[in-house]
Image (cartoon, rainbow, N blue to C red; front, side, top):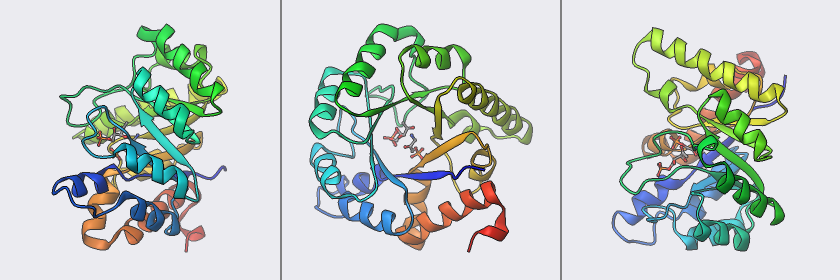
Length: 249
Ligand SMILES: CC(=O)[C@@H](O)[C@H](O)COP(=O)(O)O
Ligand SMILES: NCC(=O)COP(=O)(O)O
């Protein structure tokens, strides 16, 4: 049974900082705490409107973290140029609309094949591992294969927003089917969006998954329990789901 890795998204440390325009809390400090608490990677979403993570944050994180940086970004020349300059370990290409509160769905790779394929080639040429943030739909998975992206990240938002046990089960089955299909095609499969302490275990238990990227719920829990404890508790749940509770201290 393979390990399941935790990418901690620290966007909303920057949301709190930007709320007052202070220098604190600093995402660079948050990344250090998260890594020391067990994060296997740090994820940030550099949005076109810089509503939270800024270019300064991405530059300093790339220079200071000890694990690996996963830069989420839209498929634009501006962001591609930033990625080529920063050279994060990973770039996750995500859809973006200025008016959205948060990411609302997966990237339409199938409908934008030429642009996404060109972006993947540009990032690969810069030595960056590319992940495509997509819904668990076969045609999007097939399009990701056509772009020769080594990774995909399956959008778990609909699963997270399901409100009845039946809907949760239906969404989990849909995720599992897509993840298994993608894995069989040779893709490395991550997942994320909307995962929290009460819905993460069924997703973490899917054996074909490599990594979960989780942010909002961890940062929210950190407001009460501290960031180190919030990260450690999430990682413990994930490992329990994958390996059973007897193996996690
Ligand atoms: C792509 C994704 O699902 C998350 O990384 C999300 O985009 C976090 O950023 P926001 O909270 O600004 O949406
Ligand atoms: N790609 C998902 C991510 O990085 C974090 O999403 P969320 O946990 O903040 O919803």
